[in-house]
Amino acid sequence: MNVHVAATLRRAGFLVMVTALLFVPYAQALSGKVIDESGEPIKDAIVRLVNAGLSDTSASDGTWSISVTATLEPQVRKIVLPSPILKGDMLYFAVNGPSAQVKASVYTLSGKKLYTALDSRLNGGFYTLYPLDKQTSKTIYMVRLQIDDNVSSFKLIANNGRRSVSELSAVKRMKDNQGASGKLAKRFVVIDTVKVSKAGYESAALVINSYSEGPLTITLKTNTPSYYLNPPSPCYNQFYVKDCIPGDPKSACGGECTVANSCSPPEDQSKANRPKTFICPRFMLFSTEMIQAAKDDAALYGWEKNGELPFNYAIVGHDPDDGTGGLDDTSSSCCQCYQLVYETPEPSSPKPPELPYPKPLIVQSFNTAASGPKGFDVFMGAGGYGAFNSCYNDPAFSNTTKFNEFIYDKYPYQNPGSGGISFLRYETECRKSWPPTIDDVMSEECQEKIKEMCNQALVNASEQITEDTRRSCILCNQVESLYHQNWTVMVKRVRCPENLTRVTGCRLKEDKLPLPVPDVRTPAQAVANGTFKSGYHTTTMQDCCKPTCAWANWVEGYLPVDGEWNSFYSCDKNGKPFTR
Image (cartoon, rainbow, N blue to C red; front, side):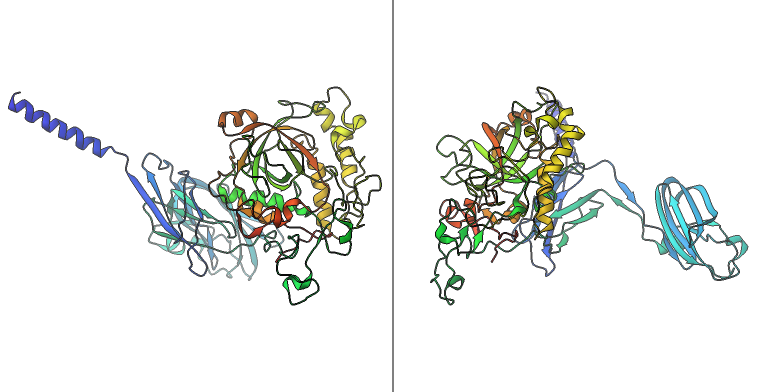
């Protein structure tokens, strides 16, 4: 090869290499640390860049780092200007470029408009405005300043006409190094928002103008939602309390070694003098606590989109299907969680696509001997007694407890085997045609019948249980949330969301399991996802008995519990959980 040609090719190759290096997308690393109010690092906080759609989880020392390539950097940078302020009797404000319509009006304190001091389009920049006409007395006025769609209101006192004529109602543009900009903070550019969240803490947000900022130190304040409680009491979740000597106040639990399931049958009648333990009404689908936990987890895990939550929360009776190639690994399903995607309703129900699919449920297993290994028995207000009953003194039901202690003072009437208050039961009001239609369910007659029946629920000792039961019963019979019937469902075993376990009290060590999938809401999406199993179904119930999984004996030894969070809570008949 000619030496000159070879040298040319070498130079060309070098040029190509340099050019390639110049166009490799660069990455900027945004980093920082998450701490609590005492300065201690916070582990497992979720740090998200809202615009870039990237996230990281803080390490044990609280540190995090997110790499953002140039191709991901948002193209739109938002200029944020400071809010208008009043200093004495002078308004200082800023206009974002290139221009904005600015209007200032003066009112009396009673709200009567006196006049418009300014109404014009101004170019971007800093401005001052003395909005008052000549005044001869000290009077208090209201000034309303509108810059495009942003409105601010101020209360000011007239200064007895000390201003010169040229200043009255005059707006003046100031240079950045003059009066207005001195009173106002400088404008700044926002490229993204860093959001940090962790269960048990208030979320924090910080705007940034560059991905090379940092390291950022973000402090989270402790937040204790109203449903957060101490772990379940070991005096109420064991068949027989360890280290307890009956009647010995110096032994464990003060010598009170046993408690009773509120339902007898199946509980032994010899426990009639023992404290009675019930299911906790806070576990109901659409209870106050379940609704709030779903909102809090959506914020924690970044599930919320356009103000919509992807899931509702519930608990279910479910028999493990281990050994059948199914969902479960052991002979106990206690405290395990599942994502249920609703598929096909009962034959006597309207059908999709006319009937909307209910939101997927994220459910935690609270009971065994429920509806078989392919079943999920959903706990809801007036969902049907099931095998036993300690909700209400109903002599028509053969397995109503003989302990004569109940949660409800009044309860929606239901035939013992009818499955509770469901639109399917009311042929005259809700099934006017066959097959029944959406219009039938949505009709005023049907919904009034549902409300009439559900509103019979009454707990004299608790307005919240009364309200929650009625809400659960009513909402489960709405077209958009028609849970109160037997559906076929597609199911995926998932890691329990943090705040769901704070409502129930039971938490497993299951870090290797995936979290629920917020983008899977329909059967088609579940099939496309490829990780959901079919062949499962739902039923409904509310029997008020103490759940199997409220006994730690049915959880510990079968599944890896997380410390003291070793069972569901159980409650007294007034709905108060027994805690440590």
